[in-house]
Image (tube, rainbow, N blue to C red; front, side, top):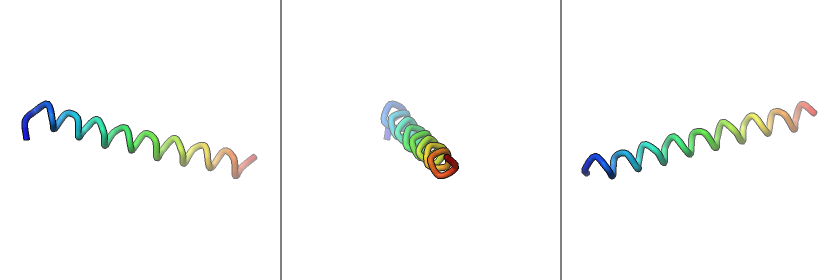
Length: 33
């Protein structure tokens, strides 16, 4: 695995993490409303 591929994998993991956190925050906001 070269550096470019590893960078894409890290970017994908970060993107998934951001989406999960964003979804969690939205869910909490909706539940609290």
